Image (cartoon, rainbow, N blue to C red; front, side, top):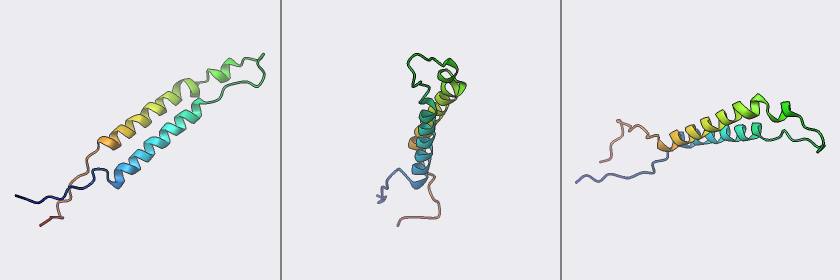
Length: 85
């Protein structure tokens, strides 16, 4: 029987990708907020339904979730030069 050392599956590369995905998500949510008016009698449709808020923000949020899922599912390559004896 071989004695294999089990390590933690999450490596620093996974954490970096996870943080990048989280940053993309936060950017998407920041771009989505706003659009309100201080005056309740004023309605500005161009600000509320802007292309950034309607199109770009959801794309960034989905891309961020995809990067996060990839970072969780990514397997690290085994280093062939290291051997545990």
